[in-house]
Length: 170
Image 1 (cartoon, rainbow, N blue to C red):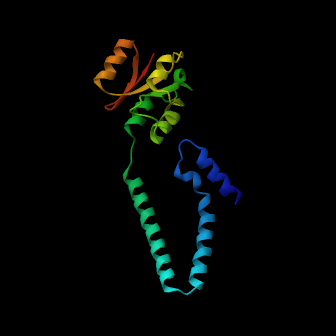
Image 2 (cartoon, rainbow, N blue to C red):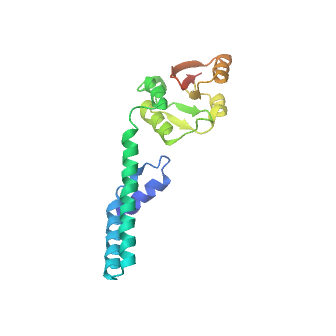
Image 3 (cartoon, one colour):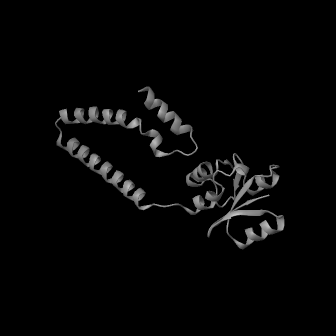
């Protein structure tokens, strides 16, 4: 039970909220569901038994649907490919990385920054990047003409890009 509570606390306070953080909860939840189901079956009420069967079938259906969706989504995302070129580059280790507000820090963007560059995501956007005094700070922007113009005017250097994003430094 201690691991279950610990897992739930970790999941609640973590920024990424990855679903596998709560895996230790599953055995305890299964035991509770089993005890509850046994109690319902002992009541010998047909309506409750049918309801229980429908709930079990629905939960399997939703799980299968999620698994199939995860399996279909393979490969790297555009965010991952823009961070890959700086992977293990000592100049950018623990560098602050800022994201344009339209991109934000979704779970995949946050994890790509952490995993591919050992970067420290910052939530202050372009304003934070311009105020930041570090020379190795990075800014993730969508590939738009307005952003390209802004980068050229400010004299920022593009260090990685793909069809959707580019990553600049001062």
